[in-house]
Every structure is written in structure tokens, then in C-alpha cells.
Image (cartoon, rainbow, N blue to C red; front, side, top):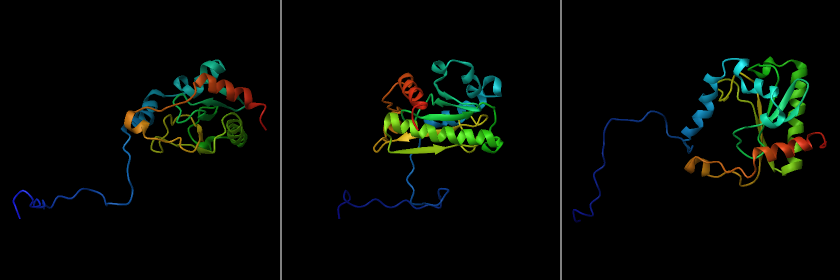
Length: 188
């Protein structure tokens, strides 16, 4: 064998990386850390909480699509997909267990209606619903409870957010708010 075609000698040492190899692939998204950490330090109470301030403004300014007796529904300012809604109680409480029985009932009813309305106006084929509880649970604003209602369509996920740090949203927030708000009381 010639020296040029010889395989290189393997490097052998006692250094081992932490962790155990597994079958999972990982997509590293450090840009998402801003959503996890950014809101925590800014919200120090109800006086500077965006979910407490939103109902004090017009629906158009705050992107509110529905106001209930004990809570409201608002478009997410940084949506994962068009029509990404947040269901919030008016009270500044951090945890789902802090809701009263009446608040819980209205919270659930608004979540169901949000799904019906989104099906009516944009025909998603599925949804992601969820509440991130606490800072370690991934809540962007842990001080004020909110549930995400994210409409999903086949093929709506791609690598643009990972590669280019960009999310393609096909409709403006104002147009989405107008459609969802207009349909809220007409869809059963």
C-alpha cells in the first residue's frame, strides 16, 4: 500500500463526552431562548404584564378576538402559524390550578370555540393546544397563565426557522384578527 492511500491511524485517548448516545436527533434552536427568557425579567407584576395590559386597549390594538366575562382570547404577537391564539384569564395568575371553577369553565369553553372558529375561517387539519407552566416548563411569560391554540396544516413545518431564523406567516395579524373576531359569535 502506498503512503497516500493508507488509512489514518485512529486517535485513541481516555476522553469521553458526557451523556449516553441515543436514537434522538437534535435541532439546536438557540434563537428560541429569547422567547423562553425574554419575557420573564420584563414582567414583574400585573402593572407591566402584556396579558393584563391588553384588555385595557382596543381589540384592534391588542389583537383581541373575543372578550368573555372572566377571560379573553388574543392572537399571539409571535405566532408559530397564522391564527395562533392565546386564551387568558383576566386575573393575573400564573398557574392553571389558580383558576376558579367558573374561570376554568370559561377558559375551556373559549378554547373549544377558538378551535371551531379557526376550523371555520382557515380549515386547519389539526391543532396543538398547550400551557407551559412556570419558567422551567417553558412559559415565555410565566407570571400570567395562557393557553396556546395553534392551528396546523399538513406540510406547515419546514426548516426556514432553523436555517434562516425566519418564520413564514401567510397572513397579517390584523387580517387574521378581523376574520377570527368576525366569526367568533357566528360559529357553533
